[in-house]
Image 1 (cartoon, rainbow, N blue to C red):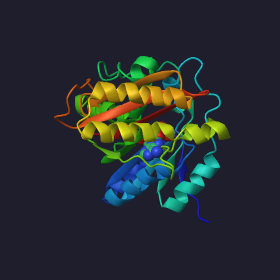
Image 2 (cartoon, rainbow, N blue to C red; image 1 turned 45 degrees about the vertical axis):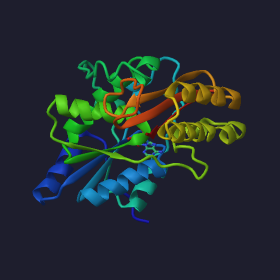
Image 3 (cartoon, rainbow, N blue to C red; image 1 turned 90 degrees about the vertical axis):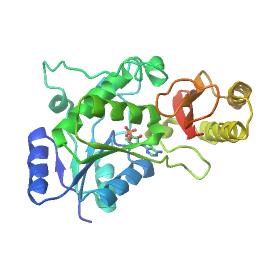
Image 4 (cartoon, rainbow, N blue to C red; image 1 turned 180 degrees about the vertical axis):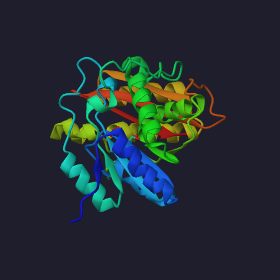
Length: 281
Ligand code: AMP
């Protein structure tokens, strides 16, 4: 089976992309942390459809993991990921070492106050600064026409749109829909941490958010539906529950009545694994 060309340095990435530019190709970037699944591959397919050349980055970004989080055990198997990307038809894998992205002495960070401080930002301090910093660097290193991010990490998608806008990075930030298992569980590299018992419970998160969305769309009160969802999740074995909340789909500010696009977002632990999910309203 043919492999995928892999580069590991900013200069090799830039020269490959410059070659594509000379040939007149448009370029798409799909940033990932590896542990690839159909969610990632759906973004690769979106990029292949919308741009002539697709580069996928694979970088487990230490700056977006907090103390006691799973940086050391995060799933890493570059050979498997490279095989999946080759089969999907991606054109280039960019898999830099940590020192390539953060050479000794590098200190500049990108943070997104406001949007980056709520929800995930509240429960994972520093997380979005880590994400925003690495994504800004990846965008400036590759300078793609479009970059693709999953709605699975809905707040992250909004934050990346904001940083591209505020820093005048000329890139089209495109969101892709959440890819789910048959039972509704959103695909995630971290699902590998679930025990067989927890894996059976995990789809309750999506089922609960979907039921909540249906009820609220049907005119039921947000607060009562939120209380109901919280007790359903606790009864199923989730806990602690970081948040279940209805937010404006663009600002992520709390909403009390649905008169413009909104999103239900949730984060909860199931055993040792923290799951997040969201559904539109
Ligand atoms: P990660 O490797 O977890 O950093 O994810 C890389 C990209 O894949 C991010 O833009 C995620 O939002 C996206 N992604 C992860 N899981 C899914 C999923 N189940 N459906 C769609 N996109 C996803």
